[in-house]
Image (tube, rainbow, N blue to C red; front, side, top):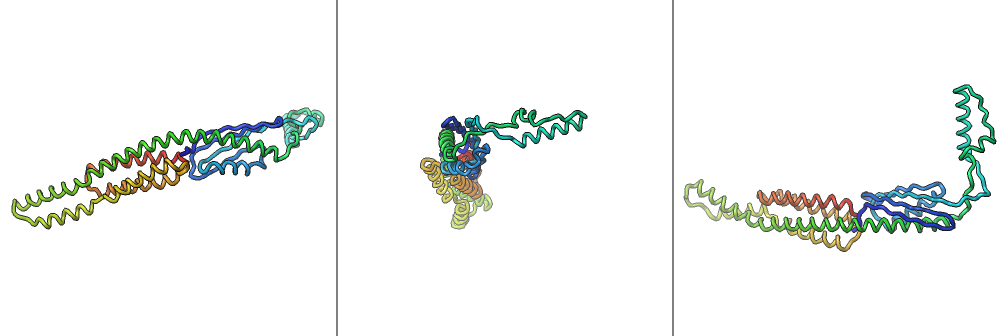
Amino acid sequence: MFSMTGYGRGESEQNGRTLVVELKSVNHRFLDLGVKLPRALLFAEDHIKKLISSRVSRGHIDVFTTYSAPKDQGVLSLNKAVAESYVQMGKELSAAFGVKDDLTASSLLRVQGVVEEGVASVSEEEVLALVTEATNRALDSLLKMRDTEGKAITADILSKLDEVERLTGVIETRAPMVAAEYKTRLGEMVREALSGADYDETRLLTEVALFADKCAIDEELARLHAHIGHYRKILSTEPTAGRKLDFLTQELNREANTIGSKANDAAIAENVVLLKCEIEKIREQIQNLE
């Protein structure tokens, strides 16, 4: 089983161009991707999403990228937005303080950021090759961490399942005693009420049988055992079944609730409370699994 939380980093370099991809993953019901890219890589967003979705099925994943490329020393470009900001600020200063606005084109060209060196041209195919390599390396790192954490969570869930099974066994042992004890109590009450006179044993047995049928929990206990076995099978054979286990946990809780409402016995009720506590702990851990 894989956890849904983790971090991965991948780097790729080619012809002086370097791309670093970082992935941060947290719990989410479905696969939700937040991709942050520099302008030069915006065209690669769908490609990155496809790479991730091919290897991850659940979790919110933030994607961060850092891209650097060699400058083309022979190509200069004018950043008009930066230049316009400086011109506007010059006008505002002149109006606010009554000073001369002596900004010239030559002085503006010397302001940092107004003139930019062009980036050496490169094809989208070359950049996509960098993106693919860096993203897959980041995914390898992320999945390794998710696998390690997933194994720890699985071990914890299995430990709690053992306790659920133990408590189920305790309830199973106690269940047959409930009707027998009820028969004894009922017989004593009848004898006391009739002051030792004879009473209809058949009527007493019928009443006990009705009580036993009303508080019978054999089917619920059998389903609990089946769910526990199914749980263990999924944990050992399916790497990404968090949603399925969530539904199965609801079934465990439903059977525990039914047992608690039918049993009509203090000892069973006490163990049902403990049982539900363990199931809730399992439910909390399941939220972390893919």
